Length: 319
Image 1: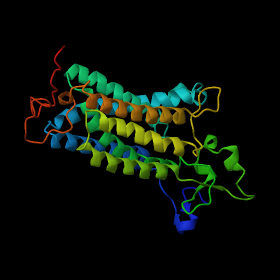
Image 2: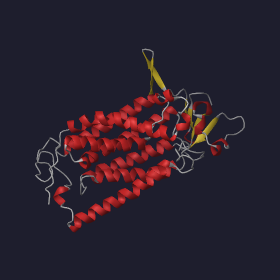
Image 3: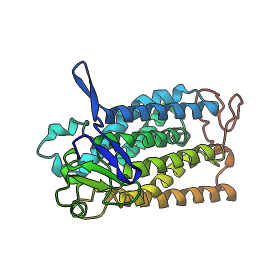
Image 4: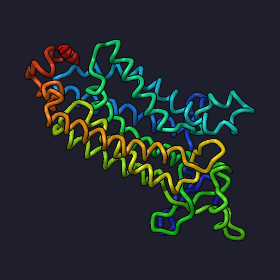
């Protein structure tokens, strides 16, 4: 294979000269970044739409969006660098170079939730209400953003010969992404690797979750249930997909995959939390009016949104 080619032999699809980016006025713009920005924007649009549908001002989302994007990118980079420190410790300036990838989505998710908590404390909003809106947009952004990995020739899996197998020139991928197991399948005289398209698997899984969250959004029993479904659903898929990726981040000094551990914790924790809250509501230990399922656009629900269109949440009475 020649540099720049990407092929899918069992599908009869051969792409030549797939670019990593383009140049504008002498400045190189990576398609990786373009795809991620598009995913972020469309995710913000979906989140704003969900907020507006439930009677809140969509500016609530866009005001938060600006802050959240910056914090999430920083969080995603810090998370990645922390677990790949050996590759950055001797060249600290390379930490600032995002054009070659190196954003760990879980770092972005953690940063996003922390930003929601701080933002809502300042704005005196219910953080779980905001999380429900944002997670619907976030999972769509992730589904789109994964295609940035396609242009970057990264986030692929071990060797496979299934009908979705993808071939990449060895010269186009990072050496550290080629495991010993993958290298053992490189035939004599071959200059390519044949791998799982894990970025595609995750993108499709995320789209499935996106559809599920849209369906469940109007059926939720309390603020935060959509966010819990996001955490559990994404964790479930990521746990299995992570097992076949070659660029897995490990706990220092071990062969334990960081993302698999976190994915398992999020899945179990979100399911347990959802069941517990539902039982508490059913038993009367939590007042249902404090956990409204839906606010119809154009109507005022005194228990859920006394200031329609402002995004403000009612204050719970002290007992």
